[in-house]
Amino acid sequence: MKMKKILTVAAIAVFIAGTLYLLQCLVVPKYMGDVVEGNFMAEYYDSGKDHDVIFIGDCEVYENFSPQVLWDQYGINSYIRGSAQQLVSQSYYVLEDTLKYEKPDVVVFSVLAVPYNEPPKESYNRMTLDGMRWSRTKIDAILTSMTEDEQFLDYIFPLLRYHSRITELTADDFTYLFHRDPVSHNGYYMRVDARPAENIPEGRPLPDYSIDAAQMDWLEKIRLLCEENDVELVLIKAPSLYPYWYDQWEEQIADYAEKHHLLYINLLALRDEAGLDYQTDTYDGGLHLNLAGAEKLSRYFGAILQEKCGLADRRNEAPLSIFWEDQAAWYAKDRKMQEEEIAKEGR
Image 1: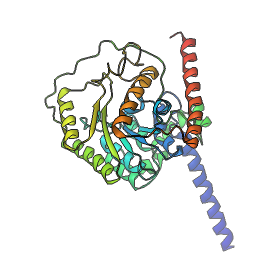
Image 2: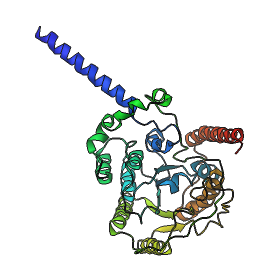
Image 3: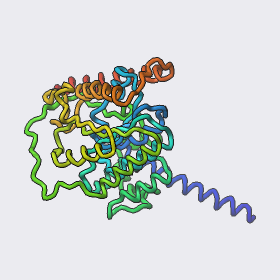
Image 4: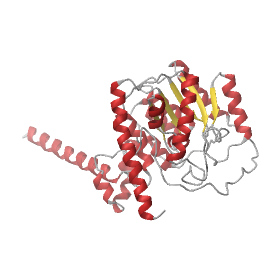
């Protein structure tokens, strides 16, 4: 009789736990609609872990560089571990997480986030942190990133945070209950539509142009982590016209790179050399490049990576070539679907 009670209690506990798990899977955001960036971080874990180059940072990496072009043109095997509004501290933990799985030759870090020391909204934290696999690194990243209104327990049990979505469910919540379709191309967010850059505002004067010391400390932690793992760190400023990049910020980043013998490339200043045309090569008025612009920039930047960092052309490696052939088919399919959608809408 006692054993029967134990088994009954155990069965009830399993049923309750299973029900709560299913409910949690149902109510968490799926990021399969307009805000697909929430799936970028998790997609990395299904990739091959033999990358020559890892990009880390915010939208200035995942919307402006095409790993497919880097492979097709130069045989560079790369992945972009970017996320929306990724803080410098988060980039450090993303790098630390990446180094658990592989040791790339080069890490490319976008410096746009360095001058900004305000925490993002919770939604941006979620898009970076939820997709990371659980580890001490993820725990540290959460504790460092949380806004005042966030609770650590909500990250452990997302049901606590998203239970109210039960009244807002859509078809996607059921379709993607246990899986997600791929939404990026090795971390690259493809957009083929075009909207020319017009009326880009000049930067408003700031009371102080000094980059916060805490932010520079996180950049230094990134540099030291690369150094400890024998990884070359390359700093870049993407050619986005907005948010405004002040000359004073440029000077501080350039000085830091020179002091530590790092390669720093301001692609905003080199946009003409890269052949960018902001009438055709951006999809949102100059904030980010579209596919045409990203492919131009990747061809230009790939040559720099190969020349300055000594990366080998790996297109003669059969397993990688097969992988990238499959990727190229998905890349072309995505391009075609978007082009057809635009034509259908008459844009």
